[in-house]
Length: 253
Image 1 (spheres, rainbow, N blue to C red):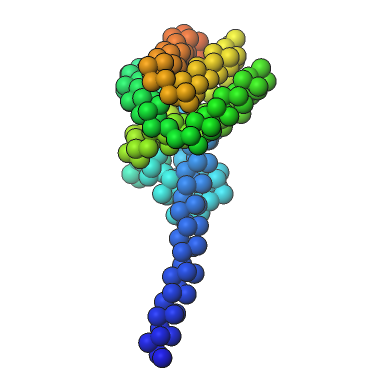
Image 2: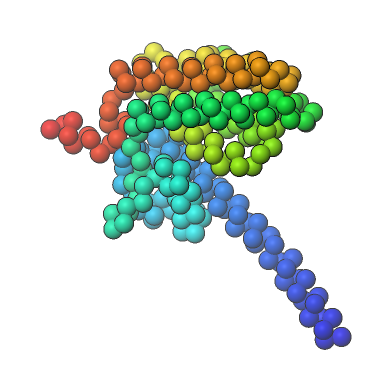
């Protein structure tokens, strides 16, 4: 009987601990998502030095979730951990990020091909629904709304590709270029129209949902070419301090 009670107690303890574990994982993911959104919107300015406490205050999460998120973002090369100096939001190097776009092009081709080949009926329905949503909202989409939908599209494509390793590879690249898009559309005079990028995403969704592999890969290439076109405009028009706020004193000298 005592042994039975002990086993029952262990089961109860396990059941009680499981939600806490899930909550902890949720907090880790939520803290990462919050910091990622702040990076994309440049609320965490490139080049800025911060402490862990600064990020806790900014996100509203405790030390452990924020520490976990910072480690992931450091591995993604978006945050630099500076011993004895705290943390630095990595400055944006347009030449490096344009080079990384070539890497994204090749990986994205592979992912898009897998997604078009493997997409289940459920995946296809989700993509067709998203395609309709983009078409309906195209003329009134805000940049914030588009970025939220863009995250969902990325998750849909990766889910359809059904290869978890690819998520860890593409996630930081998606964040890097979502931030490039934000800066381009927010701070490049006259380039706040979202029609071009929206049309590219619609073409990708339609081709993948209909399992047209060659057309899906071509649509993916067209999207990357569209992103590449942002760089020349940014190099000519963007204030360097938006890419690295640590140069502001130098510019003012």
